[in-house]
Image (cartoon, rainbow, N blue to C red; front, side, top):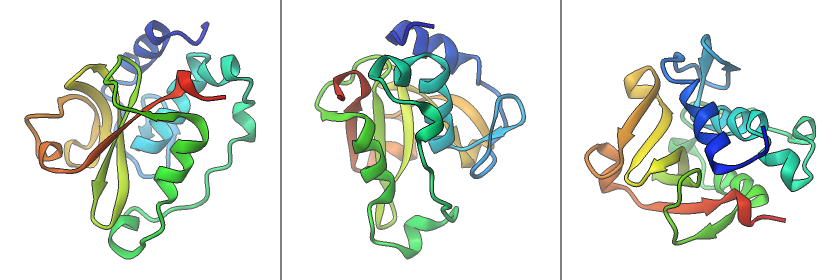
Amino acid sequence: MNGTRKDVIAELQSWLGTPYHHAACVKGAGVDCLMLMVEVYTRAGVFARMGVDAASISIPRYPQDIMLHRNEETYLNGVCQYAVETDQHDTGNIALWKFGRIYSHAAIITNWPHIIHAYAPEKMVVTGCATQSLLAERPVRFFDPWGAR
């Protein structure tokens, strides 16, 4: 894949139905929202296009309920290493929501407000509408991985 927005959506759709599993990253077996982003952007060629060796991306261990006990914006800071904040809701961009104390849940935009994400309440990777769900009431920020580097 060439790292295009179309490549991202094709790869992302292939993860639909994968069970939600904290910190996992195996298509069809288990993934969470963070690892879904890493795997999709890696397999779609976005990191390679940016000159980033996906094997060099270090994901520290993180508790599933990190947003309840920590104030450090580790997820947000990690996203900022590979994407630039934007006000654009473009296909393939990242939407990052605040849960609890910190920004701690992400989805990839398919056609705003439509998203695909690994969502614990749904127990799998699902399509969603960000304006008609629990996400609608939460602060959200947007990031463009094609604007990085």
